[in-house]
Length: 247
Image (cartoon, rainbow, N blue to C red):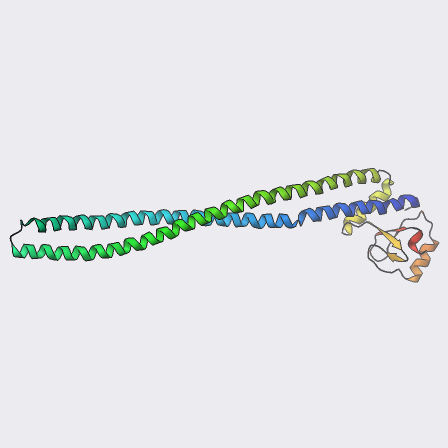
């Protein structure tokens, strides 16, 4: 393939723009703030799940406390009635009186046991409610951080996109000045070689694979006309010759 040397040199500028576009894409994909935002959103979801679970636990414990309170109150009420009956002096039968006293003692032990259970549940309720409050606070703080970080990411992405749009416009204008067949070859090579289709031959070294051309290859290139499109024997990228090529 033949192409004017000046047209071939346009490929180097085109490659710079394509490299810039690839760098912008890579920068957007690897934004530290974006990774932090994803991690933060994962944390927010975890806090949310833990908060929901804590609310359920607190509600279950509240029901347990209500039942324990009811059990204690029931025993207290029975004790009050028995004590009132005992104090009324209406019971004359010694055996009946003795049974009533035994029942009061039994109720006292029962009340003590139930109050211990009630106290334990109350402590667990306090702990569960504290966990709910703490998780709610953590969720609010993390959500505020998410909003701030998301705004930072949006601003960075917008900045990158603005640079990308400028690069696209510049590339379109430059590509229109490259002969169609040379551009097609460049695009094919670029697609097959990690986005690099053209490389500068600088002082006998390929700018694509960074290998120094052997002396016989340099001699061969010296004998080739400037409008001949040449490619690196090693990496097969288009070699663009300039005054600094060392030929």
